[in-house]
Image 1 (cartoon, rainbow over the protein chains, first blue to last red):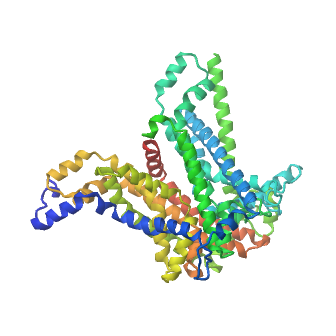
Image 2 (cartoon, chains in turn blue, orange):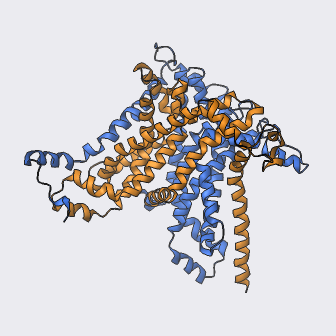
Image 3 (cartoon, rainbow over the protein chains, first blue to last red):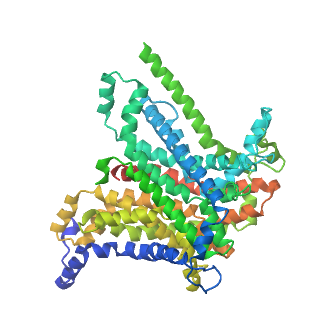
Length: 309
Length: 280
């Protein structure tokens, strides 16, 4: 019936070779190993090596030294950078996680009750997620701008309220970048939480209902514990994502005013590709890596036991 | 009775929350559209002219005529599409192997792939820039596509593995009994049946490539090689407050293809993401 059965035209010798070759996993995985090896593994090893040198982006000469590590880590700017990173990453993770759960819960409730607009909301949030980082920065600059065309301030003016220096006040600018990042990233958390909520066994809610649990009791004693693994995995993913984000900030504030919104990824970018300081940038890249992985391990240690096998 | 009012109250609260969220997510995009369709005088009216009095498409025409924008768009599309194909070529065989073979270190190498996903492109771009420089591969689209492929492969392998996991093994076995070798099983059974997963991974990779800024910004210097992400960044640097409507139009042009691509395959993409997320 099918052409699959009639495959005898290749000579037996090459067929047995093919079978042996194709029967082992290695040839199938080889392309991934090569690509990852050349473009990920080797560069990462080289970043570690470079952080023990005094290499620059322009020259070819380099000596091995610990000076770059000492310099980069004792830089007087580093505490400010780390503080800005903490606000940006911590705020994004908390904001995207809470908003993601809230939207997912309401969307699921809306679907059950047949409320109007649930699909529209879900799709709109996802559209924000697809917007390229550079474009996202430009969009939010138009909203936050203190020029006459700035959306938020012109709304405040229409309502005869005092305007806000969204991007030029060092105390406010970090929160502005945070809001724009929550706008872009919430949809991802929403998708993960939506899938996790759908996977909860409905009989748990029926049992809770029989026991007379209120809606909020059901949320805190059934929903949240059931979501625990999904929340932690999601937090790992958004933490790493946010630590690495800089394109949205580069167009929104450029790291300013002063250094108020210069997060570590933007700092690394500036050091390497504006100051040509390759070794210093490598040291900070390693630091970035350690922060991401460290946080991931901390979250992972909170995962429920049966997930760890 | 009280249960009914409780449900009503819940509905009202749901509607209110959805409205606020809708304004938060859609507001910025509609404001971008509003700005892009204003003439020079109306941009200074801010939110008071949310719906422009004299809507115009002149800004789009100006942007597409007077700049490199068509070139940027073409480059962006080319790089994103090539990386989409490249990711599939590299990741599909591996996804098949991870799904169907039992071998030592399988779980470990799957976890290893995720670890690579955690590494910022910024970290690897530092050494890669030097190699490309030495190999004379700066200012080539080949180098950019190869890096895009590397960035996309870990996630793609995970998503494709969960797709292949969803195809019953009995189909493989039946085909093998009928005389198929592994290659023809892969080619004739697994690939066609994974089509939805393959399509969504392709679109996810293309959208990620379209959004890329760092890789082309560093590896390319010639203006006629730049993709849209870098193009719009450079375009922004040339604009002033009085040409903000042009920037808005350019920005919208760069956003729309990603949105269209996403919307047309939304169900597939969400399906691939959620099945991957639930199964871990």
